[in-house]
Amino acid sequence: MEEKKEKCLPYLRPPVFVVGTHADKPFKDIRDTLQCIQDNFSGKEYDQHVIRPLYAVDNTRSDSYRGVQDLQNRISEVLKQEPYMGEKVPIRYGALQ
Image (cartoon, rainbow, N blue to C red):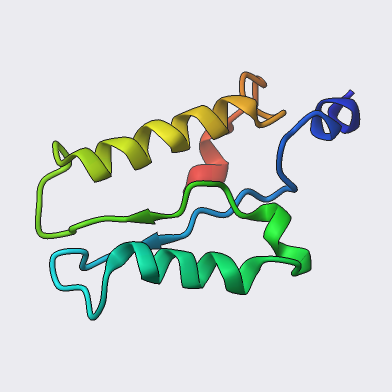
């Protein structure tokens, strides 16, 4: 069943998020940088693992910053699609030590 659910995913597993930090101090226009990164992925085998859009966040701000919120929301959306979400996994106390 996992194989069937995995085939329906819009990406290959594992999902990869590309997040640029220090958006408060870009060395050039952030949109140009993200486009350059995107262009370098295009046509590569690993491109199908990359979750869109690519993110640029200002890591000097709190998690109430919109860029961070957008990233958190997208991570939640993707994780909900993962076939293992919702599975019950037994946890033994001894395994945690």
